[in-house]
Amino acid sequence: MAGFGAEPFRARQLWHWIYHRGVTDFALMTSLAKGFRERLAERYELRRPEISRALASLDGTRKWLLRFDDAQEIETVHIPEADRGTLCVSSQVGCTLTCTFCHTGTQRLVRNLTASEIVGQIMIARDSLGEWPSPRDDRQLTNIVLMGMGEPLYNFDNVAAAMKIAMDPEGLAVSRRKITLSTSGVVPMIERCGRELAVNLAISLHAVTDELRNTLVPLNKKYPIADLLEACRSYPGSSNARRITFEYVMLKGVNDSPAEARELVRLLKGIPAKVNLIPFNPWPGAPYECSSDRAIKAFSDIVFEAGYSAPVRTPRGRDISAACGQLKSESVRARRTVPGARPASESVAASPLLG
Ligand code: SAH
Ligand code: SF4
Image (tube, rainbow, N blue to C red; front, side):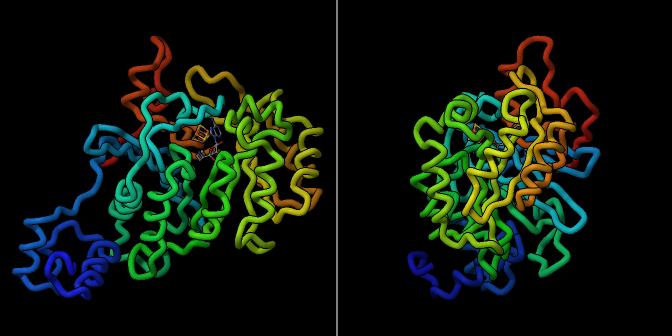
């Protein structure tokens, strides 16, 4: 504002209109003088990413395919539950990592999202849910998880800038306690994430030996399990009240034996941890199958009996390809889909929403 020749306190007023009220038109900012609003409109624009597709699952999950100025696309998913609503936010177009069970990892085009493109996902969800001005309670968007497309710790500066905006109590006002960043294990960035953002941490572990994790999460060759767990042990702010989540995708005959459950318990010793078991979500051409319900239950029981919470994540929005690991930009998916294998999102009656 100073650079624009306006009093610095105008920044606070603008912030309020943009992030608390959610307006997208300077003309509506009635606490600002008319001439000032006009000058702003001449120099700047306020807009959202374009919604190129909006889908609603039969279970209430919504997915938005968003398109940016360079025509790159990403997905954002809202998952409503009885006592909360979680927004799953993307941090990159595609992902440079190539976890073998993840659809995003097969996408070739990759770039980092800007901070504004990350915040834009939250703004779009708030628009669609009708949650302006930022409600104090009774929200449908209570939690944010950085579990969409991309590896957030490979785009840390933009993710951090976006989350600081999301957390600001005068703006979007989502508490850091309700934000979870999920990483496949970028060890050198974990400490900084805790120190600068102090958000909840989730680790995509998925295997208990380096040999297997090297194939499932190839980043493990660079940062093996022992180093990853060491970084978790010293994660700033973790405690018994704020546990680190270990995500574990259940792959039939690959990582789902009782012996592996017992080894998982052994590895987690001394870390304030909880385990999240994710039934594998299939995608066209995926080289894995989901473990049986029995295997998942047996695995969960072993972890639970050792004193860790071990819920099985209910797959949500599978009918619109919105579940974990199914995200991939539609444009790229359409181009790369093999003949005869239809994208899952089009194989069922997904009802388009009005943007
Ligand atoms: N890149 C980050 C965050 C995005 S992935 C990370 O890997 O942690 C969010 C979660 O979904 C991760 O735990 C990821 O391993 C998991 N996931 C990926 N593909 C999946 C699939 N097909 N089925 C179930 N979970 C999957
Ligand atoms: Fe990237 Fe995460 Fe998918 Fe691995 S699981 S390819 S890190 S988005």
